[in-house]
Structure formats: structure tokens, C-alpha cells
Amino acid sequence: MITIRRQLLGLGFVAASSLLALNAAQAMSGPTAIQIDGGPLGALQLSGGVDGYGYYYNPSLSGSSSNGANVANGLIELQKTDGVLQFTVEIGSNGGAIGLGAGTKPAQTSITTFTTGPLYAGYVTIAPTGLPITISAGQLGSLEGYESGIDWNNPSQLTTDIFQVQNSQNRGVNINYTSGPISATLQFGDGWDTGVFNFLQGLATYTIDSSNAMNVYFAANLGTTGNNTFAYGGSTGGSYGPYYANSDMIGGFYSYTNGNLNLVPEVQYVYAKANNKLGLTKSSANFGAALFGTYTFGTSPYSVGGWVEYEKSTGLDNWFAGANSELAGFSVAPTWQYKDLFARANMGVSYLLNNKYDGMSYGYGNKNNGKIALVGTLEAGVLF
Image (cartoon, helix red, strand yellow):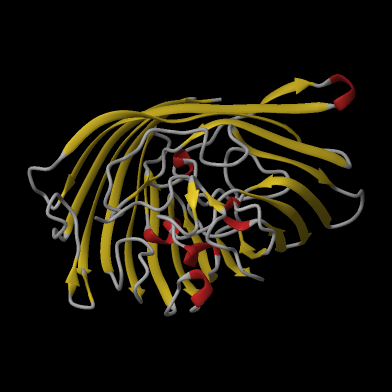
């Protein structure tokens, strides 16, 4: 049976971030912060959102379909974004991003995924006056990838293989440098929320002009994370797999905007070397490529988002769809938004181009042999 590996992934981070993630596809207008007089703290910003969805999930296009309804997110964030001492506190429940092709039906939102419980993000930032550097420490978001762990930031509620194999929230220290069109961020912490501080991430951005921006990111494990450590709701030696927390990654995406059209190609490669102490008898890897797009219809409340993807795994480890898997998929999401209210229909189909490893087959459905999976959702929410 194909199993989903993560539900809460890929929230972009920046020293003065908001619920609208740094690397998110701007399919909709995100929360507009409420300005608050914080007295001795100065000006504060309060923002948040809540959404839910109904879903239809049909693995293998067979009779084993299911349907239901879930809460996706309930998040509230308080920030101080000016002065030398700044902070961000974001609490609530998150789980609306659904991995297309992962092989399980959509799950209910949760506040127990991280060791910090309902604290989704919480960090203090020092921004020295007159310097291009800021330093942050606490519960931080990942620097990896384009898609966000908060579904309303993405062109579709359904997410790609690229997103599913990335690190998410973790505790650590972050240093950011910005000068003109160039910004660069390094983060050191306990990748995969393991409590083992040996994970380094980096993100570099070059903003060419208002229509073009290039982003390159990497992640590297500087030590060994053992099999008995916690990792997003399970142990690295259990169903989660030690190859995630002991992997290295490189990727990049390019954002191009022309009027109401935004296109973002992304490629990513993640690799885990053999380590007999961890039970990794052979190396394995996952390659993903995707093209994201959004188009807004003038000044109307309507837009459409979506993506196409290709995934290829090598080796015996189940990175996303199965050992040595090869997959193609697409998603499309027509969207309506009026001020703080939004509604979106999401539909996606994934197809296993290869579902065999070492003479064994796997796949979708009750018989674990189907090659096609279909997911549809209808979501609605309010942002503030």
C-alpha cells in the first residue's frame, strides 16, 4: 500500500514572514494583517485564516472510492516586523495540503504533528539598524521548495511529489542577508523536527526584475540521525524512513510573470547514501520536475491555478509513490475569492509509469495494483 509521508510541508520562511509564505504560488490574495497598537511593543500585526473541504478519493478508478469532509487549517499569527527586536508567533492546526499520488485519502488537520504541538511557528528576530543582515531563532519554516504547507498559498490544494519529500517546520537558527536584488538565507537546526541538530539549509534569490526571479535552494545532513528519533508524527526507523532525515537535496525554481499569468518551473533532486547502521543497505534518490501556473481573469474574483509534474525514484526506498517509482500527474483548480472569502475546486490525477521493483508490484486501490489515482476537493475559507 502506498502511504503518504507528510501532511505539513514546505512553508517558506523569511525574517519578517507572514501567513503568506515566501515561496508560495500566489494563487489567491493571502491574509491582510490587522494593525494593532502593542503599547510598549510598538505596532503589531494580527492575521490568520480557517478553511475546510469536502473530498472524493478514488484509487485505481475502482469501487474502493471514499468521500468525506475535513478541516484544513485554523491558524492565527501575531507579528512585530519593525525595530531591532522582532518576533513571530503562529499557532493553530494545519493540514490542508494534500499529496496527489501518495496513495491515501485526505486526512484531518492536526496539532500533534510537531513536538511543539499547536505552535506552528515561533521565533525571535534581531534586525540591526543599518545592516543588511537579520538573525532569527526558534521554530522556523523550511527554506526548501516553492509550494507552501498552507494550502491557500498554492495554485492548488493538491501538492506535488517535490513538496512531499521536503523538510517542514524545524527548530533552529537562521541568518538572512539582503542587498538590492540578491538575498541569501542559511538555516541550521533539527531538520524533520527530530531534535537532532545537524541539518543545514540554504536559499538564494536573485530578483531580475518585477517579472522574473530565480531561486536556488539546498539541504544537507551534517551527521547521522538515528532510527529512534521523532520525525513528524513517527520515528525515522518506522514507517517514516531514515532516508528522509539523512538525505541531501538541491533544487531551484524560476518565477515568470506576464500580466495576469504566472509560470513557475521547478526541479529538485534528493539523495540518501547507504548506511548499514540505519538499515539503508543501498543508496536511493528522488527526482521531481513540475510546472506551476496561475491565471487571474482581469479584475474579476475568478482565477485558475494548476500544475503538471514528473517524478522518478531510484532504489528500494519509498520516497513518495513506492520503490523505484515513476509517476506523472496534473492538477487544476478554478478559484473564486471575494475580499476575505474564497472557494476553490481542486481536481488531480496521477499515473504510475512504473510500479515495480525487484520483481514486485505495488499500486493504488484495495488490490494495491492500480496505476491511476483521482482526487477531487471542494474547499472554502475565510482569511483575515
